Length: 361
Image 1: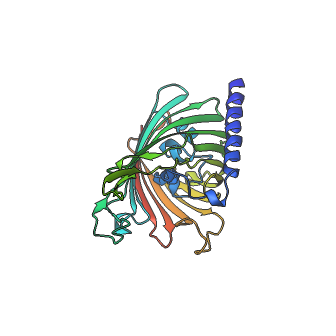
Image 2: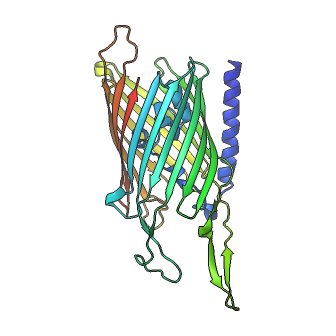
Image 3: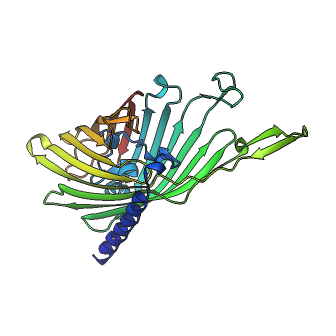
């Protein structure tokens, strides 16, 4: 019990520090962070209700919402999700395609180790220069972003679960690259006669600034004497998009047909973006089919002239957990295959679609 209180104290301290960082920001700093792809949820199940599941997320989806959630994995979990972000290949040329793969294994009685890889592809983007600003006359380039995450989560008691993630962030084109490092930490508290009430808190993307380097930051000019000179431009370092998530959820259990209705809410304090307030609702039937929806609100989201995000707030999704074996006599967990889908509305760009599959053993 003493260790549990120590863990809680550490997480609360980290939360206080992160809130201080977030409040230290101002309107002039918004949009100046680097590696903002870290703020895109690549997992279909949690994205389907706006990533509101800070308190009750379970499985590899927890890598985005709250890493403490992987502590509930039974034995082994493998997941893959493909996201067509803001229209994908059928939308604007620069829209992103996101692929995420994850693996989690319970190595100890109370501990789970997991890793994920998320790759972002942007297709071919037209090059433009000061001398030739017209698109199509200078060829194309294709940025490549990747995040590699390694995590450990631990169940300290039946009610308290925590976890930590180490992140490697890479961004590159043919002649420019950058690398960054970050840490996530989270904790969940479960209570109630049927564990129906849950609280969660997570600190995300906390780490040192990152910067870009490469030959793309230099150019050759001709001086007054007619000699060629190579000039290298200094690139300012970029802070990572640190944020703090606080959430809670409550399960309304209906014994008939093993139905469940979960109401969840969360608050996200962003250091370089407007804060988010999210509400979500999930309905489960027979513990097999789930429907969910959510809304992510931030200041000016209803004003198209002042809105600072392409996402308009509405999210929806569904999933089906298909048992792969017959029900066991002892009632233990069966291997399942989960098929998942999520949609996030956007304007004036097209919405985002995520399709995923998760194996649980």
